[in-house]
Length: 273
Image 1 (spheres, rainbow, N blue to C red):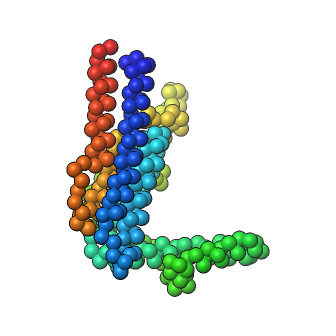
Image 2: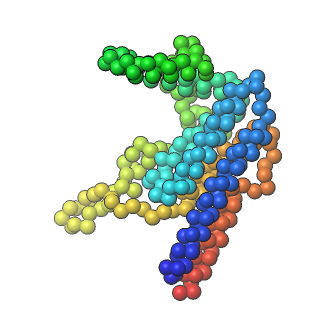
Image 3: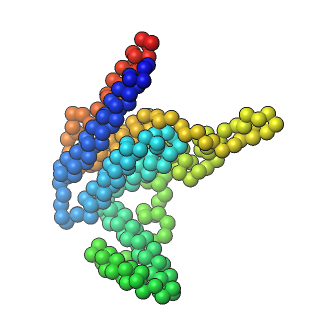
């Protein structure tokens, strides 16, 4: 393939990704507008909307950062998307309002604990400006829930780990296939480092010594496709929970079709050389 053909393929890929991002944002907007929001359960819809937004924004950020289109850096984003999907599935499964309220209380409690620690340090240091800022911030938190009426909870927000949540809502296979490998990358565990961050020294005197890998991996569009699929799973789950009709097509499907067309064109050009 000539340089001109490569540039044309790259331009087509960039255009496809930009179109995908716009369609994904539109999908979130349309799904949110279709939700039958009830003010008596507003916290449930706030949590569902925020979790969908997280999926959409993580997908957008990954889409715009081709440096993360590999299983090393990409695992950081994919791990977060898997975690978000399981949380969303657990909240939507049953007792949705109760679980959404527990999710909110846990988050506010963590914020209260962190703010109190920073404020205490600022007071001990005599930093009155920071103390004043944090006092004002605590007042802002009062609009969510009076901060002194928010329990600080340790451990998991649902009193269950993420594996238990997945098992409870029928996502055991999904968890087993995604969470452990992506977590290895997130936490920098040796099995991940061995694959993506080590090379074997070519010096025979080193006896197979593993040395730091400095060469950045080539972009792999499979990572983008995996992320698109994660977001689509979450959106499909929400549609099912709130009885919203599925659209005829989705951004993930359009992206897959576009990728196949570009790949086919690339392969034809390569075969003609």
